[in-house]
Length: 478
Image (cartoon, helix red, strand yellow):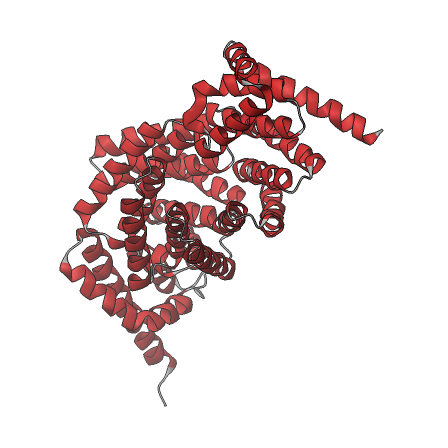
């Protein structure tokens, strides 16, 4: 019979063996070399054993420092392999025991490295409070250790959390801090990731040219590293700008490449976002059947992985394509399902787009009071987000509702104000609505109203719209 000491020795050797493979694979992936593809195949083959021995290492006790060190090593050796292979929840389960081990046995460098990964994992698992707690702790200990690079990485994820809750100023401040640190240290990879996030801030604010420039730089950086997983992220990031620029063919090619990469390397976390981007490209070229199929696949995939942000995004886009093809009741079904989660998670950006699109669906169905309720909340959210894009976009919806209620003069004046905000509008819908207004009012009256509207202030108009909506609500209640 094998004695316990011999058995433990065998366990340690096996665990170390697979840690070594993770380290080699991580190094190869960072270099972006052909050997990286070889090691990806090795990890594919040995993944079950790697997970087994990592799970074994989690059971360390206070009297087993060697086993605890193995638990730490599994976390620090894995690099971005965890993000590719594991769901956010699995990633948290992998990292938490390693963090406790590093803290217990005083490995401060490993503690900081694991906190970076854990903060991002909690962000991906839609647990912002846990993410913020771990990242703030990281900043505290990194400052004590003069570890500026870890501070930059913490700020990058804190900025992502701020962006998710619609705090664009805080997000931009965190990203700019990160960018300065990474540029100072010559970390080109992290510079690219920060540019990706700054591009998102720019797009939410309606600065589409800045967003495009950030994303082009990000893709250029990633293509130079040869990292396929990150290439998928960069491709779908740039697709958003390409769609705005109406370069549908390039966007479609990039989105398909991203999906192919995710499936080939098993990048579970990015597959659903890539499918959503591909579906959006297909919607713009009016391939609605393919669009719906890819949206449905993405929704199901994110549901199984419990990635709530992507799930809500998928439901919103699925509702959006049904809105586009005139299936309004079905669109409202998806919007309502997504809205429940957006409320629960306090995600104002999703609350805004869902309530705005719900207002459009209700208007199309002739349900003007339900549209009023949705519009009221969307405007309140737009005022809280306080960006030109959100305020101009939602005023366009108000123009449509007032037009359908027969208030053509008021609608035309607001439309006149919106002429200076056309980049933020759905142009085809807006122009068709303006044509209807001109026909309803006669050209001279319409042009006079447009001219009068150009002197209005966007914020003041939205305040007036909110007041009028409240008056309509009170009249309805009576």
